[in-house]
Amino acid sequence: MSISHRLAPPTKSTPMKFNSQKLRDIIFSKQMKLKNIDRTMSGGPKLYINESLIKTNKQIFNAAQSFKMKYTYIHIWTRHGLTYLRKTDDSQAKII
Image (tube, rainbow, N blue to C red; front, side, top):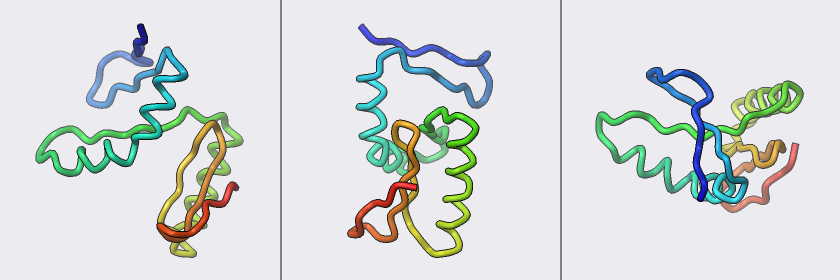
């Protein structure tokens, strides 16, 4: 059985931590479908799924986010601590 744990006291936005690496990977792989479901909900809470990154990887992600905006890339994400960029839906992802 897999469970998740709160990382902070309940607030408007309460982060959770996965207890199972397998469950975490399944949720992250289905993230886009979850975002599409979230967008169709009217008035409901927004759903954010973010990886917990170490300081260096967070700085890399932030720099890549700026690069994405400047050079009109449309996708950016992290997986297992690595940052990925994709220019179009059909292009190959680049690891930063």
